[in-house]
Image (cartoon, rainbow, N blue to C red; front, side):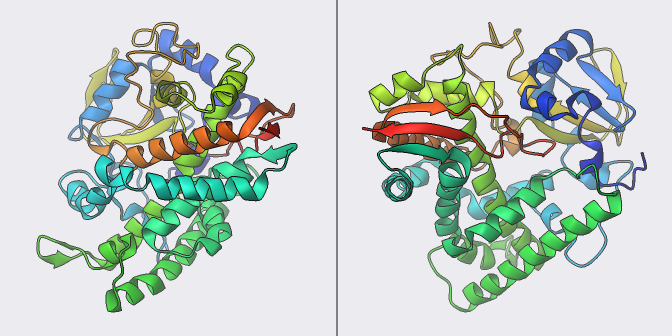
Length: 410
């Protein structure tokens, strides 16, 4: 496979290429942890790392394992105006630039600031539930609840019209997607570039408006920010806005959905317990983050030769750390393949670790707690509808496209 092809085409290991495998990758993870904890995959020209200690070591070492794709030996510069905008974000910057960019919005995502949002998040949750629930019926948890709520929240924080939520979903899905097996590398690249250009144009208009007339929103904060006495470059302003919109809804949507999947599994069977209680314990949400993490993998680039588990990773090599595998590692989590709602301690890597620990983790946790508690408080019964689930087609985001549920209200 040519190194010039987009990474989306290379991202899925052969073992996870089928729908069934990506829905339940955990058996393969277990096999890899035991037999090949650090392994090179020539088809993807990447190293895979599966054990908790190794994954945590990599995420903790910014100097040896960079997030900057330009440090990869096979890096290919995206072509076309706006094609690389999503790269101009803290997600793909090492310190100190990462810290500069994160500092622009970090105050808005600190736990104290996020706690102040709880009344509004609860109000939005109730409005959505009022609009979708009847006395009894079926709903798609993803499209009717788990997606609209995080979009409404991040839209208000950013200062963008929530009425554009259909466009937000289209953009978000495209940005995190892997290539369709029916399209070529060039077609995938064109599709990604077109989405980034469209998002860039959308935000550029809003950014210019906020520079002229700032408001109490994140776009105004980003548009008028200075780092070291200098305004942020246009590309980084755009990239930061785009990142917050995508990351602000994708992770939380899948956290809410994956949690309900966990609670409804036959060997767990907690949906009845939580609907009766009208609440979900915080520890159960943390266990969902471990058990079915919304982000299953992250990419790093080795900046120097390094030996790990007897394997030598070369400078410039791409390294995929499998968070979903690390979170099941029995060396860290006894009975790791079982859902234990009151697990403690639970130092999972569901939001990553180290410098790039998820900026929006406090917001995602709060949204999930409010959303699930309000949902279960309204329901007397909730059951999954038997159907073939379709996984989110992304090489690192883990969830399902739809989760139909039968419900009865209190």
